[in-house]
Amino acid sequence: MKAVIQRILDASVRVNGELCGAVSRGLLVYLGVARGDTERDAEKLAEKIAHLRIFEDGEGKMNLSIGDLPPADGEKPGVLAISQFTLLADARRGRRPYYGEAAGAEEAKRLYEYFMLKIREGGLPCEAGVFQAHMEVTCTNDGPVTIILNSAEL
Image 1 (cartoon, rainbow, N blue to C red):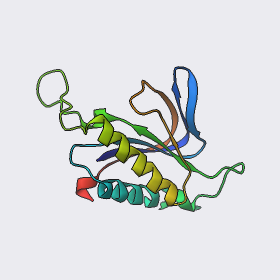
Image 2: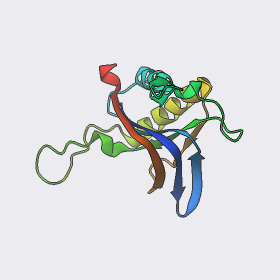
Image 3: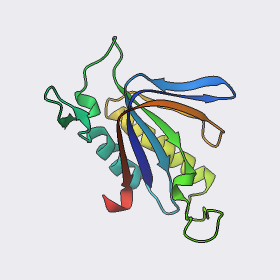
């Protein structure tokens, strides 16, 4: 399972012009599920992402996790999770990426939803896109801070 995590000031996702999910501060997570990934992979990524110290403290050092951030305008910082099988692309040969390492749709959706459940169980709000839909994702990247994680390396 692979994840691209972006620290954001705001992010939203639309499908067919309709808002599906949005967070005002926190993390935008693009999640790719590989063949052979399990619930344990989702748990490891959710735990790691929830506790990454990539937000600045009062001294300007990245010492805070998303859970350490205070609410802004009464809204708790959250996670916007977007399913993205293209993270599993192998573009080493030719011009067309190969997606054979991506999990099948049914299993990918199950693990994507399980990942979001684990984020929520950790006390964080978690919004989502629409699985297998063409999505328009908008964000204001903060920093920019972008981290790439692979559950096999955790």
